[in-house]
Image (cartoon, rainbow, N blue to C red; front, side, top):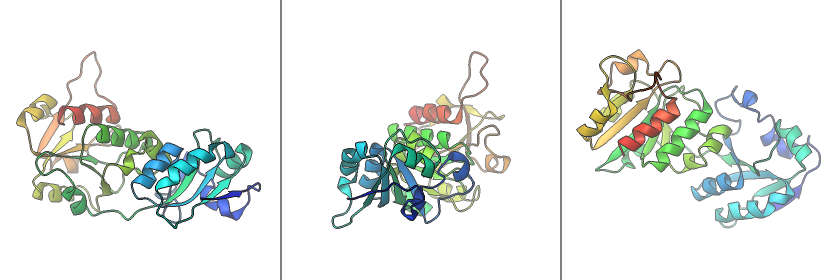
Length: 273
C-alpha cells in the first residue's frame, strides 16, 4: 500500500469519501463511479478475500497496521493509495464521525445474471432468498448475515430493493454480502418464472389467507426452495402473491402479529436449512 498523509479536507483525492451520510447516500442507488464503501478493517478484508478491488482507503494512522492486514490479499503488483487523515478531517469530508475503523472505496464487481447465481446453488438442497422491495438497509444487511450463517445458497433482490452494497448494509452484514452470491432480478414478479422453470418451489412469507404454517412447508421437504420476503410494512405485493407456489406464515403468540423481516428471515432460513 502507498501511504499518503492528507491534511486538507478539500483535497480532491478524497472526493470518493465526500457526503457519505445516510441521507446523502439514499438519494442515489449507487455511489458515483461504480464504487461502494467498505467500513472497518474486517469488512475490507472480507471484500478483498472475495476478489473485490479497492480504489483507495481513508484511515487514521492508528489503524494502519489493520489496513495492511486487510489489504494483504490484493493482487500482487497493485498498489492501493491509503490516505491518512485526522479524525477531524475525516469527519469533515465524510459527514460523520469515523470510529469503526478505516473506510475503503471499492470498485463494484459486475453483477451476475440470475441464471449464473442459480447455478451456484447446491444441486440437491438449494435454498434461495428473494428480497422484494426492502427499503431499510439495516434489514438487508441482517438478512444477508442470516443467509450466510444458515446456509442459504444465494440472494436475489428486486429492482426496487435497497442496495446490498450500501455502507450500512455491508456493515450490518459483517461483510457477508461478499460471501453469499447475489444479484438484482431485472424484472419482478415476472422473474419468478425463471426460478420456477429452474425447479424451485417459490414460497412467500405472508400473513395472508390460505397460508400454510412454516412447519408444514418444512415437512414438504422441497429439494429446491426459494423464499420471498416482502417489503417492510406492506409485505408481499398482490402481483407477486398471485404467482407463488406456496404462501407461508410463522405462527405468532403473545398477541404479536408479525416479526420484523430480518427476524422472520432467520426463522425461515433455520427451519428450512
